[in-house]
Length: 344
Image 1 (cartoon, rainbow, N blue to C red):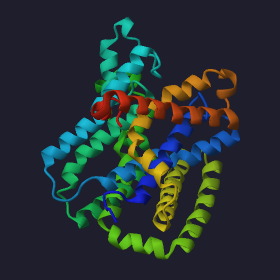
Image 2 (image 1 turned 135 degrees about the vertical axis):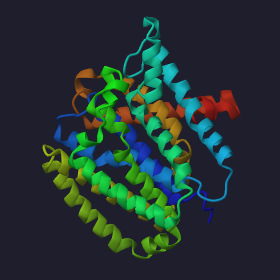
Image 3 (image 1 turned 45 degrees about the vertical axis):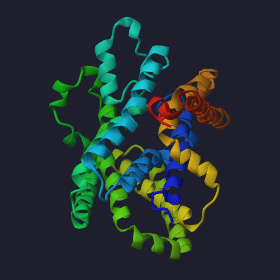
């Protein structure tokens, strides 16, 4: 088996990118009031944590030149992010509506720094500091990594019990006023993301023992995980008014979902070409899909501000296939430079 291409990790990435697109296809507003839309919004919360888990799992931990690895990661992440951000800004399709014609150079620069030209690009800011942290993490022993994981788990619980304790007052002086919003900070906060990154890292360290156990106990493990997740989803649905319980139960749902997807991927390979394509092009699809989703939603503004299964599915397919078309064209036109233009 090629340990550089774990099918189950490819499957997690493939499922997660489909989930990310659907999150944005649910509604043109951040939170829909439709009960089905609310449920699907909660259910798909595994998507970004799944990417982060996979990133921690796949980060190179063996003997490798640090400078070379840092350069390759930088070249893989930053150029396509900047290209897509600037193109969407100047085309006027950026979510925040920044217009270069208004001379907002400083605002554009700040948006680019914090991953905010399109709101979903916060992920680039997050994965950048997680990768930077990884160069310190590579120096730690397996025992130290486990210790950090337990510390991160404790901090995550504490964070969701009272997130305001984890937001330094100095940010009011550092961030422009319009950026000092709880939602803006929460999306980028290490306590939201570090646990799943360390989980992927720790699972990789002990995967020679974990993988056979998941394979041997597939049926009882998945059955128990699905049953537990049904309970978690019920609690999530009933506890929306209670922030801490709602968010902590969502973390449980995320972990159970990733466990099930990983177990399914270990048990058997299926739709290999499709899974492999989505996995290899995850970053590009992430960068490209949002304007296509919004373009379709804007054709039906009154319907897509609410939730419609048909219209959300239409926008979801539009986001996916629009991204694939751009990736295909970029590969034909730019060839070996395509990864620096669109990320694939």
